[in-house]
Amino acid sequence: MTLLILWRHGQTEWNAARRIQGQTDTPLSALGIEQAAESAPRLAALRPAVLVSSDLQRAATTAGALAAATGLTPTLDPRLRERGFGEWEGLTHPEATARWPEAFARWRRGEEVGDAGVEEIDVVAKRMVAVLQDTVDAAGPDAVVVAATHGAAARFATVALLGWPLEYAPLLGPLHNCHRTHLRHDPVRGWMLDAHNLP
Image 1 (tube, rainbow, N blue to C red):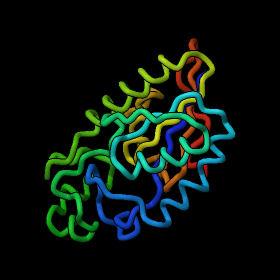
Image 2 (image 1 turned 45 degrees about the horizontal axis):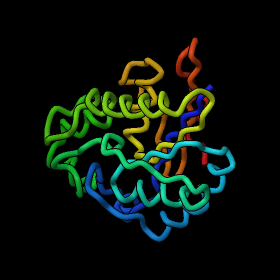
Image 3 (image 1 turned 90 degrees about the vertical axis):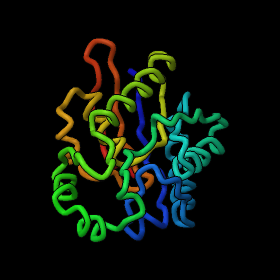
Image 4 (image 1 turned 180 degrees about the vertical axis):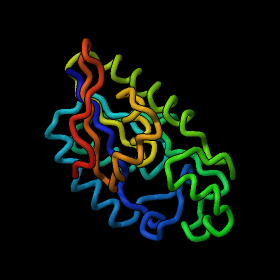
């Protein structure tokens, strides 16, 4: 069976300040660089054959730590980017709540936002599934594939691959910085969840 690992990037200053990042291209903080360096050997021990990454620098830098440990060359793909949060990007949660109270409450409940230019959940899930399925298919059976990506995007991808309703994504709980979700693909049974939020 193929093992697909969705690996969230290390911490950024915006993560620490609880600013909404979305597709704003923020770098890793010093702590985020340390997290990636500490996480990479654990992933390298799983002998990944393929490494893909969001093209946003926080994910690409995280992927670079694994590339250094394995010799793999990461393929950057914009379809692995975080959900776009439109006008909310750069704002703290209280700031977004003050300006869009109803829309922000919908987001907190895991519902479609329908305001402020926030990317629709279905759009995120479809682009994530497309690139992940293409990558897994190209890797061949029994390969280990690592995708360096983002928290919300990874959760939407997980529920979509499993065939669950997208509104189940919040039930997985957050994917912490440099933590990962493991999914296995069996040619007969399809996708199965192995683990979520592993360090």
